[in-house]
Amino acid sequence: MSKYLVTGGAGFIGSTLAKRLLRDGHEVIILDNLSTGKRENLPEGVAFYEVDLCDLDAIRDKFEGVDGVFHVAAMPRVPYSVEHPIESSKNNIFSTLNTFVAARDAGVKRVVYSASSSAYGGNPSLPQHTEMKPDPLSPYALQKLIGEYYGTLFADLYGLETVSLRYFNVYGPHMAEGGAYVTVMSIFKQQYLDGKPLTIYGDGEQTRSFCHVDDVVNANIKAMHSETVGKGEVVNVSGASSVSINHIAKRFNHPIQYLDPRPGDPKHSLGDITKTKELLDWEPEIDFDRGFEDLIQYWGMELS
Ligand SMILES: NC(=O)c1ccc[n+]([C@@H]2O[C@H](COP(=O)([O-])OP(=O)(O)OC[C@H]3O[C@@H](n4cnc5c(N)ncnc54)[C@H](O)[C@@H]3O)[C@@H](O)[C@H]2O)c1
Image 1 (cartoon, helix red, strand yellow):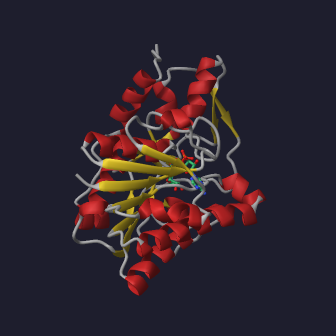
Image 2 (image 1 turned 120 degrees about the vertical axis):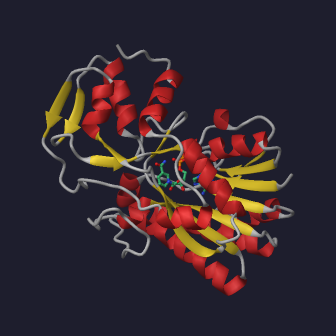
Image 3 (image 1 turned 135 degrees about the vertical axis):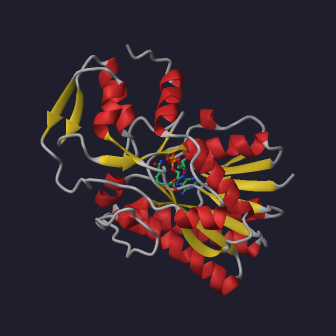
């Protein structure tokens, strides 16, 4: 049994990860300021502290005796970051820097950092791989990228083991139903329930890589244990293939309304997971159609 600390454990991905760690018999501490997270997401049996990671003095002692940290917390709001670059930078950059400092000072062995495929931004090459030049298009994307750089720097300078996982469109139970990361699935669900047509920008043939939250959790656990990482490596956590928006819409069996394409919307997204397979022995196990069926069941919906 190990003792793990999960930042952002009241949110979508962090709470799913915390549940899995508890199920595997570990002791789990959650630090979360409940800014986007919810108390009802907290699994029973965790030690929960409602603290802000930007307050280093308030979090330091929570890292004592911890074997590994999963740094999942962030304010994942792209439009908010565009409107409030200072506030979102303060939150996302300092929460990450403080987490690395507190982990280093407490002698924690490894920090697994939740990074974002938004780092690829405007780079149109496919599939996206981590040797490509980053092209962050929002303060949020830049802040997440800075977290990766801090991870590598802390490994180099202080010997803290770190690894960054760049997630692509995570979906599954408890995902956000509003905000920047609201997936097209949640939008279609709401339109379906409201009896409105499903709206698609452009011809619907744009594709996206979706990764099921259980696969993301597996990647985190492998990243915590793999002996081939720890020096600030960055790897993609992406679905194995991408699906078109039309494909998802058709699963709802509901009228569709096509709208003008949105400027700046990338045509396709897909992460190259060759390096992730090599370094973490990880690949996604849940294909999109199965993950989608499970989600529909979880929502209690029956699609005619
Ligand atoms: N969901 C996705 O598709 C996706 C894609 C790429 C990257 N990510 C990254 O994955 C991580 C988790 O995302 P999520 O979808 O679960 O988001 P979420 O909003 O559900 O969870 C984030 C959690 O962090 C907490 N938090 C934020 N700032 C904090 C602070 N200063 N101190 C303490 N707690 C704080 C929030 O209250 C929330 O519980 C984030 O780092 C995000 O950038 C998510």
